[in-house]
Amino acid sequence: MAKVPFLDLKSLNAPFMDSLKEAAASVVESGWYIRGHFCECFEQAFAEYCGVKHAVGVGNGLDALTLMLRASMELGRLHEGDEVLVPSNTFIATVLAVSAAGLKPVLVEPAENSYDMDPKRIKESCGARTRAILMVHLYGRLCAVDEICEFANSRGLLVFEDSAQAHGARLRDGRCAGSFGSAAAFSFYPTKNLGAFGDAGMVLTNDADVANMVRTLGNYGSERKYVNKLKGVNSRLDEMQAALLLAKLPHLDESNERRQEIAARYCSEIKNPNVLLPEIPQSPSEHVWHVFVIRLKSEDARNEMQKYLTAHGIETLIHYPIPPHLQEAYAHEFSGEYPIAETMAKTVLSIPMSPVMTDDEVSEVIGTINDF
Image (cartoon, rainbow, N blue to C red):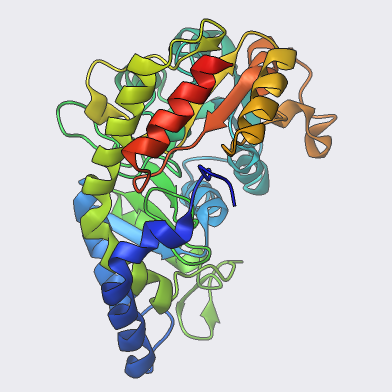
């Protein structure tokens, strides 16, 4: 085992073991395992935590993204072939969801200092068929939500959020990821800041019609058993995952605060001139550091840094090595050039970030990077 693992899920969940066991036992004893009491309680609790009116639990984060877009289409707010602006450097799920809903993804390059969709490039990416912007709070950092939403309102565009990495990220005024657009999608994949013990997802919205449509689509297109008004899918948050997530939710803010402490040390103590650190937001509460991503000045330097850290017992990952437009699945879909996304894919490196990292482990990472 590495001296400093990238993420140790067993250690991360260990402090909550008693409450997790109690929650699991309660589900088993209830005899009800799909869309029951625990799902309702978690939906309500997470909606309140994020400051929105409605939450619908679904099977996973990709389903959450797809279903919130499909719901808007069923309600006549989007139509097949409409264009949706998405970041060029996002995880493939963002783009897959747009395609799966029958919409056309249009890639927008990120700002190099933040990794997030560049508001300055959104205007030039809009076309006659552009109908929506899908913001991605990449790596747990809120993107320029006010600027993007203001532009969208001026053009009559819908705004959606991919909040899969941003559980608890807030602006200084308290507004939370998941509360800015027409709807927002969350993933509770086990590695997330609020992680389940398998796949799980959720759609948040202040629009009751969107919430009802997502719930219907995720239940085979059925509002009433055996009566299918739409061509839906099976995507429902099960009771076990809901109960376990409900047990962990009260600890999310404390967990995020520890991530912020570690990030602050990284940003102030990593001094290697070959390393480009992420831009620090004005308020550290804005960013929940799902992953901490550094950049090197070249692909060779990134690869050498990764080898060096591995040799010294420090695990790293690359988020993400291939941008969407270079994936084989989209080989013939995007005709533009996306040099910033490609450069980022070649030079980014994610270093250990976990709320259960010790101060000594953080020091080990910093010291080893500085020694490279």
